[in-house]
Amino acid sequence: MKVLVVGGGGREHAIVWKLSQSPKIRKLYCAPGNPGIAQLAECVSIGVLEIEKLADFAIKEQIDLTFVGPEEPLSNGIVNYFKEQGLAVYGPSKEAARIEGSKAFAKEIMIKYQIPTAKYAAFTNYEEALAYVRSEGAPIVIKADGLAAGKGVVVALSLEEAEDALKSMMQDVTLGSAGVRVVIEEFLEGEELTLLSFVHGSTVKPMVASQDHKPVYDGDKGPNTGGMGTYAPLPHIESSMVERIIETIVEPTAKAMVEEGVPFEGILYTGLMLTKEGPKVIEYNARFGDPETQVVLPLLETDLLEIVTASLTGELENVEVKWKDNAAVCVIMSSAGYPGLYEKGEVISGLDQVVQPTMIFHAGTAEKDGQIITNGGRVLGLTAIGETLKEARELAYQSVEKVSFKGAHYRTDIGAKAFH
Image (cartoon, rainbow, N blue to C red; front, side, top):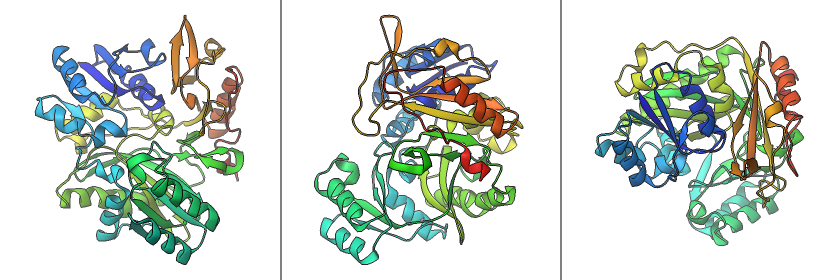
């Protein structure tokens, strides 16, 4: 088969890396890709939102399957457009992708189908939102309704922080149209986890649970980012808890989407908080999480292409999805200043020093004069596999020490929660 992956970040590098192991693929393309992906696939300089160009390329090159990585093209209807052109494409329709594209839509589904989640209210009027925040008090969570590249959530620990967040989203419009409508939620306490699942209609094939680290500094301090590192599986979380999440949250969500006439096909990301009352949904994404993909896919034993093609032919329930009995840890190296303003163009050295079982997934890199340079906030994800979580963690950090670029920042406590 000839396969095209849409995207150019760490998540897509992990997807391409996993697909490249399939004996059923003879040619792999990635648009736009990045220098790391270029070692495994032919990169095509078409942007993720150039949907018509991507479809034209798929027709011209006789692509058998397109795998869509990021959320924006999904929310913009890439799957609908490809299907109209008679192209095989993996990912949810524009209508089903609203589960990520609109926080309010997701909340309405959860309330209607009694899927456990935080109490919330949605607003388009700034004064009303402000009054609600003041009546509820802090800590409280403010979310932009639309897509904001992982930066649309503020966990406000003080009233002042909450008011600043509302002003920034609704009045200063710092997140553009994403923040015109906001969802305000009760603050949930507990431990976070992510459960990714392959979903086709009401068929759910869960992956191994993982845990992301959103705040930029050690000890979960500082502003939220797209994710500073992750690990899987979670040895300190009972398998019965994961079963409960699948039965009370993920499967009911898949069925709810079918009931609503917008069946979900693709990767459903369920972000959860394990509260005293039990697991509750924080958010859904309509695609693989970044950086969760970088630890989950290396633990997948089954051919990813086989799972995807089975889904497209309606045979997902007949596939046995197998997992390795190992652990994986991914540490993100970011540019100085991220998630705020950061410099680009710093030369990265030491990439050739990192050896198996550590993989380097490129997130925000570019090539210039034969050198790999930084080209984003999150630059690299170093993922190590080990027999145990402790071993994987040690290997990941040993590898991180070999790589350097000016101002490189990373958290030193990824995976530490599993040992408390």
